[in-house]
Length: 122
Image (cartoon, rainbow, N blue to C red; front, top):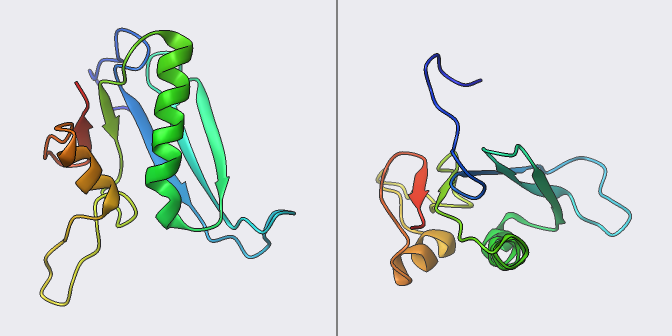
């Protein structure tokens, strides 16, 4: 649910939401028990990928990014997620969250902007 007064993105790929759901008790015919979704805020168009495990999130994101940027001729500007371990990283026993592959990739290509639940990919 969008907050009162919040504005939608002004163009496609300006803001993309993503989340991973699962595991589901009954796997797909090919054994996948999770799915990852990407939803464009402007068009509300969604992409859904079936996956075997959460650790596939980075490879799926790279594939999604390449596909939509080529198809639309635009770059993804911001990706918003729930800051779950599959995206940002796992918490250790001390309560600190250590960067996972998704966050490390974003930082390595200077795409990471450390705000709560958001990566600016400008």
